[in-house]
Image 1 (cartoon, helix red, strand yellow):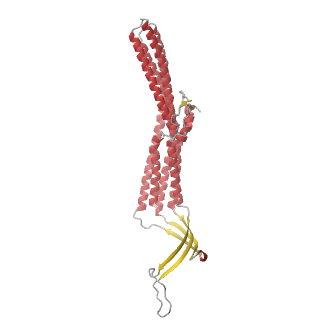
Image 2 (cartoon, rainbow, N blue to C red):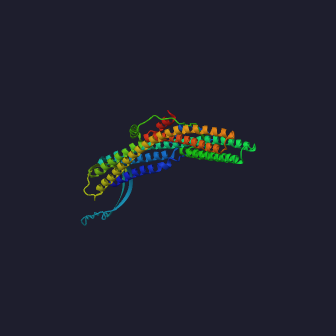
Image 3 (cartoon, one colour):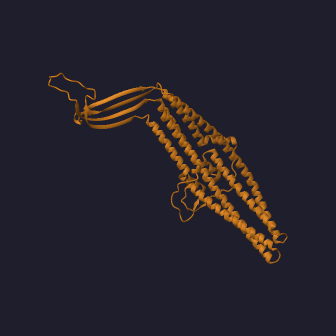
Length: 463
């Protein structure tokens, strides 16, 4: 019994370990469904999340882990249920009586003799039942298995939160890519106008050739930046398709752009209270601690006596036509006397498991605290950065306008214009980054608080 208890505990622990170890990598993959359509599809954030919750590999793996833990629970339950078996035996036997210890001889001159070898047929039908009447170890093992099933269900819910976070981040990354492409296109258009202006002034003899060359260099640089941005967007779209299980080669367009939107202020204390109340992984860790405690109680119960019941009923005879009812009933009380320290070792092993689970719970508590506080800091910082970047974009564009006017009037060369263009590029990039970081912080906060699916809709889509 002790060996089975330890083996079951190890199997369940291994399943949870593998689920955690694979989650980070598996959430990046999926099991693609369907075939690609010839025309691009429109993909909203909600649609992407729902697809991820159906086809993401990390969630599929977590589902199978949960199923495996349920199977372990059924195996534990079977030890408490009655076992009923039936059999039909038809045999033809030859027995050496001397070999069986029967060596009886009749007095001489009686006219009778006892054969040394006997041959006879035998038919038997029988149903047998065995039932554990009282076994504290098996009962407590079942309670520990129930706790592990609950932990597996909670871990499955946590996997859904991880998938929502992964999908949200991948979606936001493409939105940022689209904003960078729009900015790059605007810069190319501006550079094209400035290059044409420099070329006209040079042809008119009012500007040196260096101005034309400088403007062309800026134009080619902006064109290259546009190509890089477009390529990065296509790669990020492939990554999102992998996360949500889109068919390979399926083209899509994002239908949500998710601009900057401030979030209601939340204190760290309120956020932490909500996180510890809702985080499925924290509740799962608590259930694993409870399962370990119950497993220890089951190990201690190996010292207790057990009561078993066995019964059989059937027919037996030489042939079915002359068979008669036979039955047997037995009850047994079993108790350990000496086991060489095996039970003590089982108890000590469960003590180690309890400490491991308690350490994991304590570490997770600190991890949740860190995630909540970090997300709130990032959220506030990104909001402040957005305000600064927004003002800086306005100033940079005003500076560029004035520089273009000065260059067109022949007051200055286009060095000032190129520098103003670079300032616009930097300002636009900072604004895009601030918006992306603000929305990403919302996703991180939704994950940190638990119930990520509902919180992401509320934080990003303002539902």
